[in-house]
Image (cartoon, rainbow, N blue to C red; front, side, top):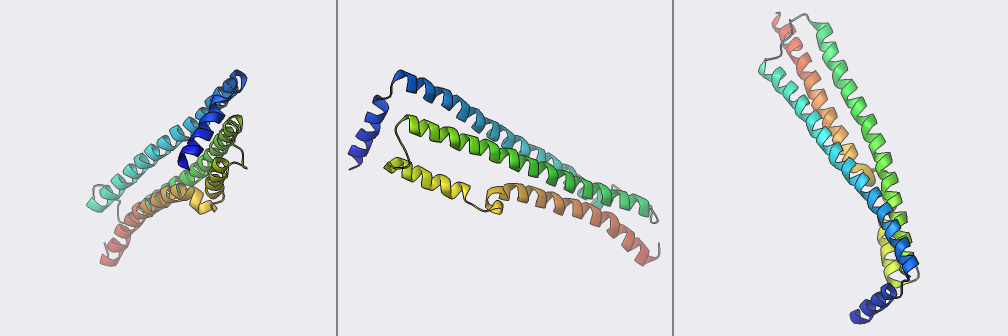
Length: 182
């Protein structure tokens, strides 16, 4: 039975005319461009997140080791650290939300172009390969918001945890000094 499916698919591809082949190739260029745009952006977003996390981790290490110190009564400086940490989290969240939207657009375009390629080959929703492919695409596109954007949520959550750690350490030294009466 597998050989028949393979032969059927081969026959469909062999019967494609030159005009349909040019159309298929043009749509492949568009599909590939949409996918590459998504893929490049995804790689950049993770690199930026790792860089941000490294900076936050170094800030935490400096505060924990006492390399970054505040005068015991330097409340304004502590508020400044807390404000910067909050701004970093908000900006990272805003940027990540934007990336989620443009990534979705690129993926949707890629699915549309792929569908056009399948139709050019004679693979519609009514053929066995078309049914299987549509089932997978429906599964992927029908996921909830968190399932689609879990990577973005995770990145912002890590940023929030690190930023909160930096702010907490800045205030912890103040509290410890206040308790000691310094």
